[in-house]
Structures are given as structure tokens and as C-alpha cells.
Amino acid sequence: MWLTHQNIGRRELTGALLTLAGIVFFLSAGQPQGGSSHASAAAWRTSCLVILAMAVTLTAVGVRFSGAAKALTLGSAAGLAFGLQAAVTKTFVSEIGGGVLALLTSWPVYVLIISALAGFALPQSALKTGVLAPGLASSNSVSLFVSVVLGGVLYGEAISKSGGANGSSAYVGLAIAIGGIALLAGSEPPFATPVADKTRGHLQPR
Image (cartoon, rainbow, N blue to C red; front, side, top):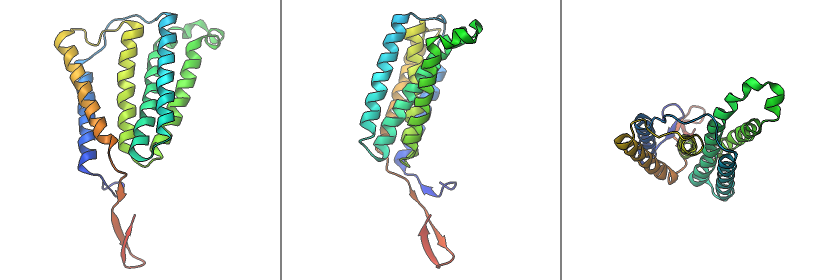
């Protein structure tokens, strides 16, 4: 890339384009509709425990890897945190009118805080690998898909108001994005394009 002086291969470009196309297709075809602003306590407990277990597992596995695999797994864990954060915000907003004391005794506040902290720390760890594409793609994609799934599970939202073909098209977009992420998972760390070292008169990696 001309901006960072790094060479990006065909695999990374193809994976990034597929991921982007899948997300755009998913958002265009699947527009969640309906539902309520509250979910049952049992549904929230189950969802939070499942998200927590998945995030902890991905993080534990990710720290054992390096390069693209580490970026992908930690980015996916971050996406889970972001997706949960998006879902719980809907409940949190409906309780703001109750005052400060009500908020301090409300569980959505603490879920938001924990998911925000996780959503801050995990992407930083993914980006430290130096392989940006898998971490960013997995984080953004998983966040989108998890928020849509939780919207349906917790709030009864439909993936598309017209259902049928639009709903199927949304899943096609999901499959395309997953294919893009799979390509990015095997990407190599980008290497710098050599630039001239004016002080020594020969090429040096930048």
C-alpha cells in the first residue's frame, strides 16, 4: 500500500473485498424489523453466558497463536463483545429515565461496562500482531452478525420485514463474508516495501 509502504497480496485483497461485499449484501437484504425493547431475564442470562464462554474460549485459543490466526481469533472475541454491547444498549436506553440510582442498580450498566472494556482490550491485542486485515474483518463481521442474532433471540426481531427471498439473500451475504474471513485467516504478515536509504546509498526496508 502506498500509505503504509507495505505489500498486500492478492489473498488479502480478495478476502477483504469478499468480507466487505458480504456485509453490504447482508445489510441490504436483511434489515431487522419489529420486536420489543425488553427481553426476559432467562434469555439475557443464557445469551450473556454463551457470549462469555465463546469469548473466553477464543481468547484462550488466540493467545496460543501468532500472526493472522491470533488476529482472527482475538478479533472475533472482540466482535462478540461489541455485538453484546449493541444488544444490551437497547435495554439500557429504555432505563435511562429512571435516574442515576436506578442505573447504578441496573444490570445493563455493568454488562455495558464489561463489554466495553473487553471490546477495547481485545482489538488492541489483535492489532499488535501486525496483521491488520484478519483482526479488523473478523471484529466487524462478528459484531454485526452477533448483534443481529441477539436482536432476534432477545427482542424477537425479524431479519427482514418481507422475509422469504430477502431473508435468504441475507444469509448468502453472511456466507460470502465468512468466506472472505476464511481467506484472511491464512494471510501472511505484510512486509515493508524497500525504500532508498539516502545516507547509505542502498535500499533498506521501511
